[in-house]
Length: 112
Length: 118
Image (cartoon, rainbow over all chains, first blue to last red; front, side, top):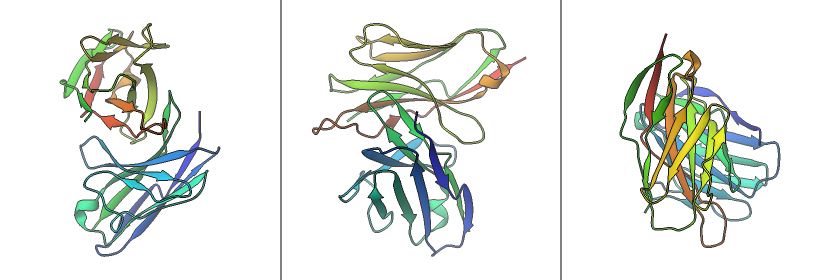
């Protein structure tokens, strides 16, 4: 199983600012995924981070709000831009093989 | 579009009893995978078990087993001999594969909050 390190683990941010979340994997993986979990809700896929190409965003998520970088096969970042209180959520990165999908510890974001 | 339905928002179970958490899914794909995760109050997502759509036998991992009924499109999680530490949110999820053969992201159900009582 892959070991995924995600940071920061939590943050409190002012509205209008941006936060970049980092995800480091201990092995090379083709695809990495970013999810959002709003308070009391389930997980929703934000985007797929592809190495060497632009991320693929799900309906309802746009690159200007959630820019993603994937500079190599072990690392990705998600930025939450121009934050509002509605962005308060847990953000999780994930890596997957055919039969497994593992998650980082999550970043608990509170926007005030 | 894929859809996962978990009809039990919450469950209370006595310690040492077996627990069945329901999950039904909807997809038009022939090839797909089904996952179960445990999320304790700490927020981490703990992978429990996987079932592929072409797997003929039900998946098992220790005290966890997946009751896979393909014709009924159900993938219920069974926890045997429940323990106090099993108290958590449980999510059922599905994945299919994109046109390039790579894995797509997961679609999650709303989850079941399981509480094990002593």
